[in-house]
Structures are given as C-alpha cells and as structure tokens.
Image 1 (cartoon, rainbow, N blue to C red):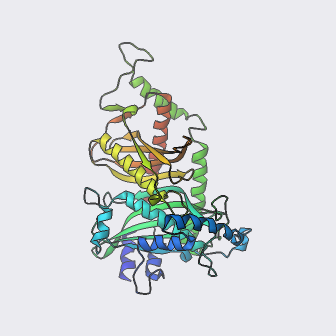
Image 2: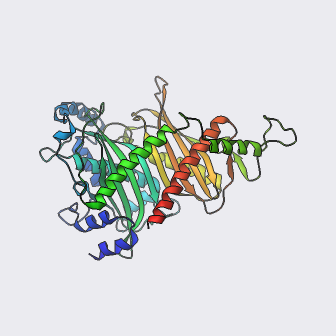
Image 3: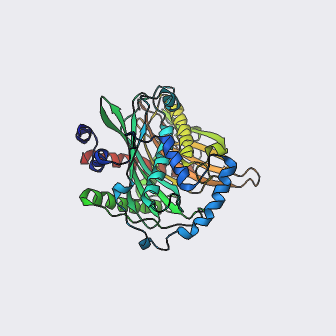
Length: 435
C-alpha cells in the first residue's frame, strides 16, 4: 500500500496506474513479475511462432487455417475493460548483472534503443491480452505496430543498476485498431519513480497479415477511464489533422513562408545581392552538412513473430543513427527528450537491405529535431520503398549551431521539423499546466 500512496506524489495523472499497481493480477504464481524474455516467449506462443527459422516459416503457413476464427463484425466480440489488458513487466537490472550488460551504453546509463524494443514487444502483448479468447491459446489475429504516437521522457538518463518496471494497458479501441498507454518507472530508494510515458497505436489484421480484422470493443469504467478513452479519440483526430496539413499535401502557412523568406534574406551575400549567392551566417551549419547514413542487412535474427523485421529493432537503429548525428552536430552528448509520429508504412522483409538516413532538420537554442528516413531495397529487383519516417527531439547541455536550409526541399524539412518540435513543446507545456 505504501508503494501506491507514494507513487501518487511522483506520477502525474496516473491514478489508473496506481490502482492497478496495487491490484494487478499479472504476477506469476511465485509472486514475481514476468520479464521481457517471458513476454517474447508468450508472444511466440500466442501466434504459434518458432525460434527455429525453418519451423517458423512452416508455422506461418499453418496460421492460414485460423481465418475461420475471425469475427465477421465487431459486435460479435465480447467487450473488454482497461484492466483486462493491464500488464506489468520487470527489467531486473539491479539484481541481474548479465542482463544489465545488454542494456549499458558507454556512459554507464541504460540504452534508450533497448527500451524502444521492449516497449514495442510489450505493446503487442497488451493488445493480444485485450483480444484473447478463453477457449483457445493461439490467436487468429496478426497484431502489429502501426504508429508510435509519442514517447515523453521525464529523465535525461536511466540508471543501469536499479530495477525497472514497465506497465501497459489498452486505452482506446476503434474497429480494427487499439491505442496502448505504457509507462516506465525505476526503483529508487524503495519508490518507483516515473521515467517515461508512451502512446502506441496497434492494428489487428488477419492470420496472413493481409487485411484488417475486428478487435474487442473497450468499455471504460469511471471518469478517469472515460477521460483516457476520450483522449484516444482526440489523438486520432489530431493525427488526421496533422496528416491533412502535411507539407507534402498543402503549401506552408503565411507565417511559415515568412520564416523561410527571412532565412533566405539572412543568407544573401550583401556584396553581390544575387539570388544565387548565399553566405552562411555565424554559428550556423548548412542542412546539407548535417546528415549521416547507415546500412543494415536484414537477417532472420531481427525478425518478429510474423517473419518480418521487428519494429523495435528498426526504432533502435533509427534512434542510434539519430543520436549519432545529434552528437556530432552539437559537439556534446545529446539526450533524447521525445519521440513522436513514427508511422510504420510498410513491413521490412527478411533479406532486404535497409538504408537509414538521419538529418538535423530544425534547431532552437540547445534543442535539435532529427528526422530519420528508412527505406528498403530488394537486392535482386533493386526496388526501393520508404518504410518509416522517425522523429526525435534531442537536447544538448549547450547551445547548438543554427541549422540553415538552402533549397526549397530543405526548407520544407525545416518547417516539418519545426512543427514536430513545437508539438513536443506544446505537449510539455500542457502537462506542466495540468500538474
């Protein structure tokens, strides 16, 4: 009971979390919480996947027979409550040094990329828990990550020698999609202190991952859950509005056009007064000179339970490349403070060549907005397809150079980066006002 009461002081807006920390039934019979190894084993069991590559391919073929188990309409499925999908998972970094080694970075902190992988796995299991049927162990649904809506970090660094608790539950449901709220807390002096909050959107598809499939409706209980559910609806509307206003679809606003024109005027060579003659202002960097690229060969080791490349792996590699350009650009160690709007546009197949390109696209004082573009290439057909666009907000302890676009395309990247940065700042300001 002391844990639940003291959490109320440190965890903003998490009454749902406090309540289920005290009443959760996710513990094993021996009183221990499951770890991430058990989470991934459970996912393989639910889907019928195998750790053996050849057996895994056969298992995916056998899943086709589960088509008949899909609901014809959502009303055929029993409604669920938020607590029905609630899960707690332990990362015992404090008591298992061999596990700690896998999470360490060179600064003796926890690697954020590893946390991204764990959040992705937990989010999928939460959704399978929401949609599970008591009459069968194997699920006919293929549940995959569609979007990382946002991840907000409350601490710059995560200690590698204290236990971590990850919690998650379904907070909103559409016809075929589910929003998952996840929280990460770390044990300090007997108290679990909040570290980050995450919102993922998962989609359910048929056994062959070809078309959408219905999921159980969600019935909120009480004012707090009603508020969470309503926020899920607002999040969906916000995403639609943001997509509609995309610079790939609509022209910049009048205010944004003025920003770009002011940047252009600030880079004109006053000696020549020519449209083509540009001069870099002091303490600035051309956008073209602030990028890094990487390549990954997609081996079976990185596959998920559906025989595609694990979304958490993609996020980890994107973050690491984004962190590298932020570190190089800022000249000091950067800290990720937010991740938002990661859309999984298409799956990455085993055997593909994965090209990653990171770009500093917006800066403000000691903040950097980094965009990572990923595309895959089939080494045989040489076809290229974009799979993801990642958006990371990093903070440096010192002011960073001003990023300066030269071309119209770079100017659009600059404005897009500013939009994502402003959304992060607005979200943090809103949270501060609600504290």
